[in-house]
Figure: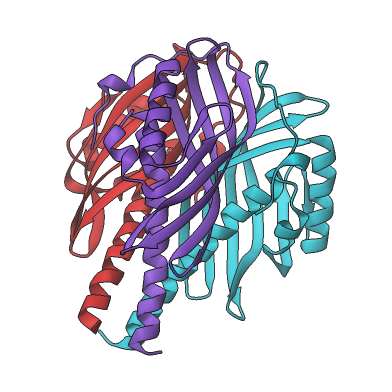
Length: 157
Length: 157
Length: 157
């Protein structure tokens, strides 16, 4: 084992942490309506495709789409689970499951679940999404759930 | 600090990542009805014990048990959380919490939760489960939840 | 790249694993009513602030507060998600989302969600919480959910 091999193994672990932080950042940005955080997650040519909710082909379009959804769904809660990542040098692909509660102004409270299909690249030492696509597994009304506070009041960290 | 010590610390971190990937793989294999992925998770003498749902004492029996469950419960959603792992060289134990929604053909939609009690070993450089046992904490009907798409349509990655 | 730099990078990754283990430990300690585990998570001057549920300003007060809550809510299920950690040497801050089901003896079953705002320190080589504060995002009754087993019966690992 030499230092070069050790460094490469360390970089692979750091890459995984950076990618998991992007996945957490996405959930936090949507739930807290945090436009600044949302824009840091994407390379300039990144795409986000949320069938039924909108799409964007660069960080500006992604933010505009998020803002349209925040008006229609003023309460979002994402809980991400089960990340399966394949990291190969400076390129990575992966899936991650989401369990979500949304308060949709027209549909009322809904539980939404599915799998994100993701691509990431490390450019100039920075891991960012290059594409994210949501595969919907279910969207079902929740008669009993009531959101009780709005993200405009939540703290940013 | 010498290179041998560094290498051992690096191996411990890589082991944790490999084990977390097995935990994610199990959730994905069950939810996507992915027989190929399911079979890669176990050493040849591994056991899976899901009281009330079945058991298996090798990868073939585990797959057969999973297939029986997929017929009775054509929609499964596992979200894993709170892994607590104890890694000691090439042996590890741990627990991980699961929040699940299942559509059971006879009981209807149910929410199932509990704790997996796991053992893992690294043999020939490969971490795999050697045993997994589920401790059920609750199984409760969900009147309002409706699954809306079947895993036969979901993508494999 | 020299050994000192490698060691620092390795320490940063090990710190993240230690902190994620504290987050998992907290969820497990509350759900399993595990007083021993709960007390290992905090430095001696650590604070826990759960508005509406109580507070504590050292491990003894935190345990006493937990025990009061266990009497009022004999079933708790925490699922932690989306950790966002900022680690700077031996000090770290972070947030982590929680989705919870509680059986409250007076309110009945409720779903509780919010964001924990955390601080951690590594003292004498041990990462522990120095403060944890819960920001409630919703608390909503769940008409259909029925807990079916008590933590007094759950296994400790």
